[in-house]
Image (tube, rainbow, N blue to C red; front, top):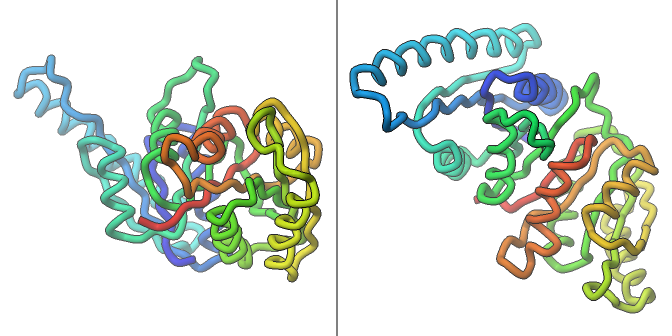
Length: 275
């Protein structure tokens, strides 16, 4: 891992992401790009009024960004920053396509509806539209401890590719055990258990350097099954593939990543192909 992108709106949730990214960068020797996108012009403002507001906002953002950069410098982590304006998701998509980041780290409020910070709503957009590995956090990580990880999979070919991506990502951390979880929902999976076990064994053999425990559970939804089981196991990280996003495939991939980001308090790593 060489390059980490951290979008920030300077909210408490964004600060959680910055702190985690710094810890990850120290472990992996990565550099960080801090990115802030100012909002688009308000059509109701006169041009002169918008210019004054833009200058004030820009100066304030620059000062706040300097404070975030100091966090990186204090930990001797290589860090650059970028502030621009426009449409957040288009800017992020272009930035990721150009710079080929290995990881994006973002904070999220989830779906409580009580707080609508910029960073929370845009995390959902990144999940849907940007092709990059994405670590989503709701709570601070006192240390980067990914010893026990739950990898949720439908056992498809693309998930096998995502699992290889995960193994490449996780090798720089102190991983000890992987829980490989497949959820059977009414009317969706219904494959014979013996076939599920055979496919899980193939995944298990890919991770022969680690202890791997396989699980095949039934639940009404994939997201609920993953979330409840991860809480029972008290894992350090939930990992799920976001490789397939067309309408039918989102039954397992994109929609479940979004639901986990909304409802799980545990860190969620969404795996994707680079754009």
